[in-house]
Image (cartoon, rainbow, N blue to C red; front, side, top):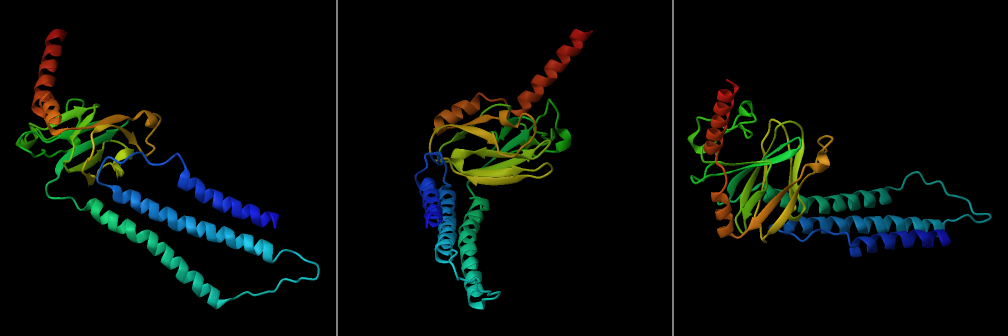
Length: 277
C-alpha cells in the first residue's frame, strides 16, 4: 500500500508541478500563439498517459502483491489487451501529431505581403540584411563572402546595392508587419532563436531555410543560438528590437547600404596602400 501511494503521489505531483511551475514560457511577441497551444495539447496528452501508466503500476503493486499461497498466472498472450493498447497508442500519437502538422503548414505558408529579411549565422556572431528602398534584396553567392562583403552579395546585381547590411549588430523590425526570415550559415549548424517569437529554424551551410512571423508587440528581445556550434556558442547573442513603424524607418535611414559599405572599404583599402608606400 505504501509503495502504491508513493507512486500515485509522484504521478500527481509531477503533473501539478508542470501546471503550476513558475518556469514557464516568456510572454509571446508574435502571431505564433498556435505554437503555445500545440505544446499545451502535447503536455495534456503526455501528462494523461504518464499518470495512467503510473496509476496502473500502483494498482498492480497493490492488487498483485505477494501473499502466502498466491501463485502467479502465466498469460503470454492477450489479444484483446493488445488491440486496445494498439488503438489507444495510435489515437494518442495521432492527437499529438495532428496539431503540429497544422501549425507546420501555417509556419511555412508565407503571406504575400511579407517582407524578406536575411539572417546570417557564423562562429560566433549574427549579421542581418534588409531590403533597401527598392523593396527587393539582391542575390548572393557564398564565394563572394569576405570581410568586405560579409553577406556575399553579387556586386553586379542592381537590387543589392541599396540592401542594408548589419554586421554583428542588432536587428530592428516594425511592429505589426509580416516578415519572411531567410536563414543562412557561413560555417557550421546554427539556429536562430528568439524565445518570445516562438519561431526557430536550423541554419544549414549551403542551404537557405526560412520561417515567417508578425511581431505583435514592441520591445527588445534576445537572439540566441539554439544549436551547439562551438566553444563560444553561449556567447553568440544579439538583439531584435521591435518598434513602431516611424521609429523603425528613422533607424533604417541611418543604416549603411551595401553600396556605401563597398565605397568605404575601397577608400580604406586605398588609404592603407598609400600609407604603406
